[in-house]
Amino acid sequence: MCGIVGYVGHRNARDVVIGGLRRLEYRGYDSAGIAVPGPEGIEARKKSGKLANLEAELEAHPIPEATQGIGHTRWATHGGPTDENAHPHLSQNGRVALVHNGIVENFAELRAELEAEGIEFLSKTDTEVAAQLLGREVAKGIDVSEALRNVSRRLTGAFTLVAFDIEDPSRVVASRRNSPLVVGLGEGENFLASDVAAFIEFTREAIELGQDQVVTITREGVEVTDFDGNPAETRPYHVDWDLSAAEKQGYDWFMRKEIYEQPRAVADTLLGRFNARGELVLDEIRISPEELRRINKIVIVACGTAFYAGMVAKYAIEHWTRIACEVEIASEFRYRDPIIDPMTLVVTISQSGETADTLMAVRHAREQHAKVIAICNTNGATIPRESDAVIYTHAGPEIGVASTKGFITQVVACYLLGLYLAQVRGMKYGDEIKSIMDELMGMPEKIQQVLDSIEPVMELAAQLKDEKSILFLGRHVGYPVALEGALKLKELAYLHAEGFAAGELKHGPIALIDQGLPVFVVVPPQGRDQLHEKVVSNIQEIRARGARTIVLAEEGDTVVEPYADLWFTLPRVSTLLQPLVATIPLQVFACELATQLGHDVDQPRNLAKSVTVE
Ligand code: M6R
Image (cartoon, rainbow, N blue to C red; front, side, top):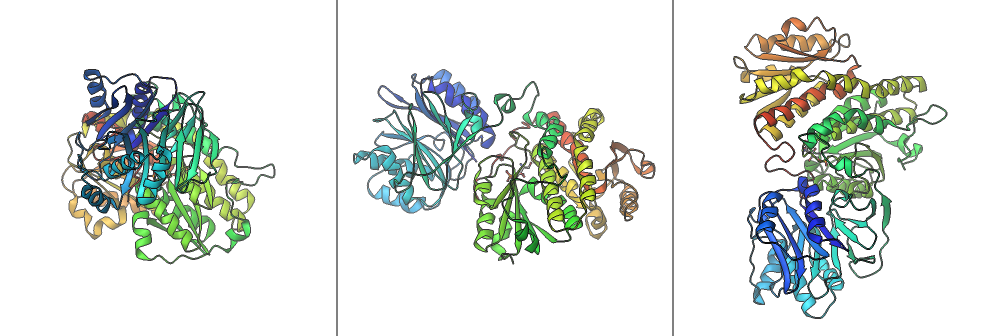
């Protein structure tokens, strides 16, 4: 939540900071602001609402040219989304400008301390205490890096702070605890940002920062210490995608672009997973086969769409490995005192790798000495860094707030993990694993087939745009797909949408069925465990009560056809892999319906891409 940019170099800071904020706006869009050093003191502009409002403000009231600057795009926590509460915040003595991502939990006591000294606060934010504390420190003659270390030690909670001192504007300083921050390394210029997307236009060389570190950037270099001033180790890395990945490339929405990138994203996630002996390899897994053989339970922990990916994975992992697998919402996990121990494998799923609820679950699991594997899309993010091992999904940056290629590649990565466990524990023969892998390798083509015949879904979205409620049903792996379809619609179209396990409907929710109510039904492939017939019966039950059934079923499924008011064919795949194709029309449907309603698809109201507060 919140996007932060800091810059020192040779370019006009306004352009770098605003360009960076544009690429980070997905992290929060309640307000935006910028500050640069001016000849007569700090020059700051800030505006509530989207970045466009700040850009209009800068047209009306330009800031001086400067080669250092900081900027912020906000998802409000403390204090409403007003101009006053927008960042940057300035210290009362005019010395420092500061932006913040996270929550300073002890802000009330710090504010009281500062107010007792005569400081008057201009905002309702927790952030302003950090600005005032920093202003007080530098006024004592302490240099801004040391001053920020002193301030950081006094704060509790989660924070990334980026600031500069007008009396020493050649440096921009930052500190981090439980909140993301990366450094971009340029030639005669350096960058700070919540995410590499902010500076990818200028450099693909980055440094990942650890917990409780303070970084100082100047034109010439970067210095990193811990909060006590001791030099700290950092991990430099090369970003393996470029600017084009962070741009819309002709699509109206990032979300639509990301939907269409799914064949490539799945192919990349599957790349290089076999060795010369034909065995599945997961190089990133730093947990020994012996340890994996000792595991007696798997707990998958995640939030939102990633949680639904985990629900899908449970079916496959249990089926292939015969290890009991639980799936849990990260925000609930540690508060119920879960039974986990060194024999438990905790698998976290997070596209961003920064979700606070999931991160806290990782820490809790490790405190109980469980092994933790992260499935993540963001190189060097906090969750993989704090886990025992990581499997990266290679989806490329996901910028639309609604997760699409993130979800699909998470399912693929979970399947790789499940197959790997089955291989290590001898639960499947090599040729069985190979045959499932072959089918997985064929999925990019199948997903492409769905995308190539998506037109009727777009038409349906136009037809249903005035509906007030839409339901989604599925069974087995189709159930989490139904939940995901409903979540997409809620977050993008703001309409009542619910997903149900189709067999559960008759235990209550069937009372919701009314004449003409649109109900999507994910129909499993024919011929396995009567699952297909059961869903066909469920369709008949709701149809008898007036539902308009929109059926997603495999090609050639003549059994279900008579009961479908509308029908979308899915390519033939096995049951466990069906989510990889069945989710696609639901993503497109939500994207298109929200577009028809005139909503901002990439930045739906009240949401932010990366939820870094609990
Ligand atoms: O970055 P994460 O995968 O940890 O994010 C988890 C959820 O916040 C995320 O999937 C959210 O539910 C999406 N906006 C749904 O489209």
